Amino acid sequence: MAKGNIPVTKNQVLEVAIEDLTHEGAGVAKIDGYALFIPKALPGEQALVKVIKVNKGFGFGRLLEVIKKSEDRVDEPPCQIFDQCGGCQLQHLSYDGQLKQKQKQVRDVLERIGKITDVVVYPTLGMGDPWRYRNKAQVPFAEREGGLIAGFYQERSHEIIDMNSCLIQHEENDKVVQAVREIATKYGVRGYNEEKHQGTLRHVVARYGVNTGQLMVVLVTRSRELPNKNEVIEAIKEKIPNITSIVQNINSKRTNVIFGDETVLLWGEEYIYDTIGDVKFAISARSFYQVNPEQTKVLYDQALQYANLTGSETVIDAYCGIGTISLFLAQRAKRVYGVEIVPEAIDDAKRNAKLNQMDNVDFAVGEAEKVIPWWYAQGIRADCIVVDPPRKGCDEALLETIIKMKPKRVVYVSCNPATLARDLRVLEDGGFKTIEVQPVDMFPHTNHCEVVARIELINE
Image 1 (spheres, rainbow, N blue to C red):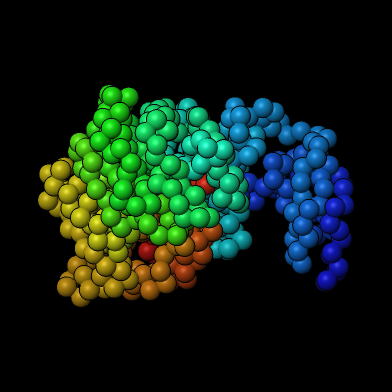
Image 2 (cartoon, rainbow, N blue to C red):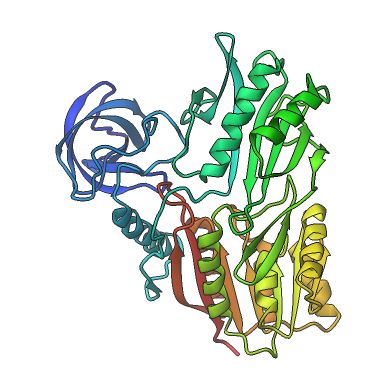
């Protein structure tokens, strides 16, 4: 494509070949080198599309008709609101096709962003039954025509798609959300109006301990006042007999953030419990806890395998959260040091260590790039460093610290293959070598992919 020469125009209808899939799940067609992104189109398809937006370097199209279908296309996705809801992006792609696509995505970004071409990327580890896997539902509530609605946001909007059931949520969470909707309607608890900042009920958060059967419901409200509070609590206990905990969280701000700063226990226990493998975890209303415990076990087993612990090692877990990976590592390591910037998460991590009677774990609050050098100055030498950063990847200062500390091994757990590739490049330039990479499908039917990479020190 000649510079500045865009070969398509808005509202143009054209037949295209779909060559690839973006990390957001849209099909990619190239017209004279110009990329057109088309949601719901799949690689290998011939399609009729309408150009709906034209930017300088790329454009967007709407799928009008699939002329030649991919063998992996699912003609009728099982969810009735798949075309409206923004929760899933890939139900129109067979599950086997999703796993292959995620493997390809990881390989592509390693090559394109990390310039890493000589590493094995294994087939994605998927689920036997890739439905009903989420142990936590966070459902916004609102009013429509005088009635309460509850659902998920339409893609790229704040318009709630009303729903009764979500096929990637555990059935127990669906029951909780619908029960609260009925109870709130009966007792006059109004849904939240985002534009006017009025109404009471903003979100209902349901948490389910898959291996313990314990249930928590969190009512996120705009103010402390909850109309007919006692009646609502008693109705929830009656409607959901296996409920363990009823919590209110107050969020009075005009914000898209779900939780506010104040949390009040209305009834029952402050925590529910769940297990991953042999490790038990206490989960509060705001605890970070992986939403797919079955695949979390697969992910952590892989991290443990790559750490290659014999029982004599010292391990540092950067970005340790509530200690999930730390406690897994502590089963095989001599000593584990975990660091996390969120104080409440470290409180949870210490509680979880005590719960599992593990005294070979130390947790500290702070920035990993500051705490780890301090540990190093105290004489702590890590044989292995494990990182599980947020989507933005590792802080540059942390990567520099790892390069200075020269652990024998680094295990990188990533929820964003692009920032993983960027960070692996830095580590490779600093004397490390990426040995192998394993994608794990933690979120079937969505575009998200978790990855575990094994990195070893070579320049010693």
